[in-house]
Amino acid sequence: MTTGLKAVVLDLGSVLEVVDDAVFPGPFQVRHGLGDDAVMVAAEGLSGDAGVGEVTEAQVRDHWQRELALDDAAAEELMGDFWRWYVGTLDRELFDWFSGLRARGLRVGILSNSAPGAREAEACWGLEAVTDDIVYSHEVGLRKPDPAVFALTADRLGVQPGEVVLLDDIEANVLAARACGWFGVHHVETTTSIAAIEALIGP
Image (spheres, rainbow, N blue to C red):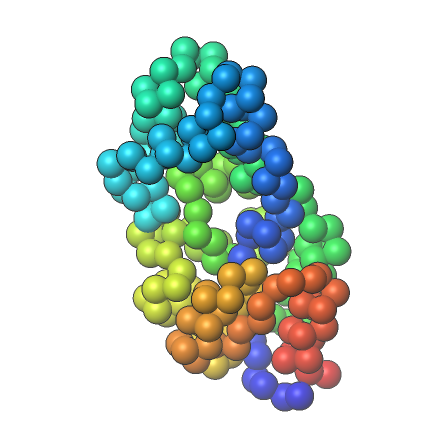
């Protein structure tokens, strides 16, 4: 299949990163005698949308500390648990394939609906060394499935919409990318996702 594909863009959470929902917030809530939904309910009262950069990481921490009546040590513990959950573990098979695409002449990028502090937390994976650009929603003030964030990402990668594919675990984001002229692959399983994108890249 010949598509004229010039760029591959991946999501992070539940795609390049394998996220374990058992890590957060359940264990923290159990250790501190909080209700099952206490952390998520507290987060709903945040004044500002962290995902598009309206609040900082410090403001999120302070809000949780205040709403959950935590001391400083517990607040730091909560944030530590959050980031361990957020970053997850690396899908090594997908990363190794992805990191080899530039050597094949493709532009590669990340497009992530993110939280303030994500770039610093996810630096552990060395993503900047293997990508041409990383677009974090909290940094650019736009999130998937907003068409504007797809336009911005394609522009930053220097490609036209019909020359780029998105791999994302959320079907609504894949459909939004397609509506913007991108190719889109719904990520369910790594080997299948790689095969689907390889078919778009062609020989």
